[in-house]
Length: 379
Image 1: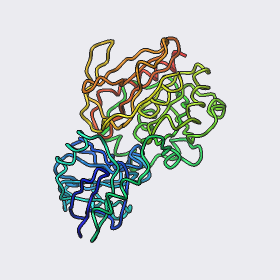
Image 2: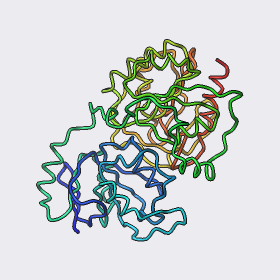
Image 3: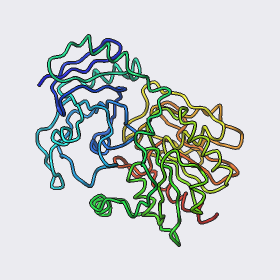
C-alpha cells in the first residue's frame, strides 16, 4: 500500500506503508542510532513525534519483549529507508511490521531518509503528517500546518503513570531477565537499600532498572503529585525523569521541584528532569533547531576533560546564561556547545541532559548513578 509523508514547508515524500493503516501527525524528527529502534519506539519522550531513523535498514533483528522501555510505543509515527521483512534474532518474537500494526503505529518506508534528514537539519524540525492509501499530498501539507507546535505543549500528562507504585512490584520479569543477562554490572551497590522518590514525567524503564541495580528502592509518582507526598515517604533522594514536550509548559512540575530543592535532599535529573530542575533554580530553556537524538553524541565532562559518547533524545536545552551563581555547568555538548549537565554548588543536586542509562546506547555515563548513590549515602 502507498503512503505519503508531508511536511509543513510543502515538502512531501511518497513511499510504502510499513505499519498500521490510517493517518497520523506530529513533529518530524530524526534519530541517528544504528540499533535500538524498539527502545526508541517505546521511549515516552517521543510522544507527539514522528521519528525518522537515519540507519538505512530497520527491523532486521525484529522485536523482543525484553527491549521495551515502557508499556508500549509512544511515537506518533515512524519513518524508514528500508524495512526488513525478516527478523533474524534468536530473542525476537515477531517482526517490526507486525509490532507496528499491533500497536496501531502508522509508518512509512522506501523514502530517501538522508534527503529528509538534510531538510530537517537545514530548516529545523517541522510538523508533518503520514497517511496511507490514495491521498492528496497538498491536503496533507495543509493538515501539517494546522498541527499545534511543540512549544508550549504539555505532553507529560499523557505519558505519566496514573497512580504511585514501587518499581520492584511492577517491573516486567522478561525485561529484568534480559537486562540482568546483557546489562552492565553496577559500579557498586548501596550499603543499605536506599529509598528514592521518582517523578514520572515519562520515565524509561531502564532508568528504574539502573537505580534498582545500584541498591535503590524506587517509588514512582505521577508527574503532578504534590511535593509533600514525595517527602512523606522519607526518601533518601529525589529523581526527576525524562519525558516529552516543552519543559517551560510544566508549571506544576516546576513549582513542585522548587519545593523539593528547599528540602535539601540529594536530587538527580535526566533529560526533561534536567530541564525542569534548571527552571526550578531560576534558569530558562529554549528550543533547539533540530535537537539531539541518537546514541553517538560526544559530551565533555568539564572537571576532568573526559569525553563521553552518550545516548540522547531531546529538543529543548537549558540556557547557561540564565543559571544563577550557585549553579555551575559540568558537561557540554561537543557538537554545538549546549549545556549537557549542571550541579548546584551548595546543595546535593545535579542533572544531565543525556541518558546515562542508555538502552539503547553506550554505557560511558553510567557512573552518574553511582554519584547519586554517593550523595544519598553521604547525606
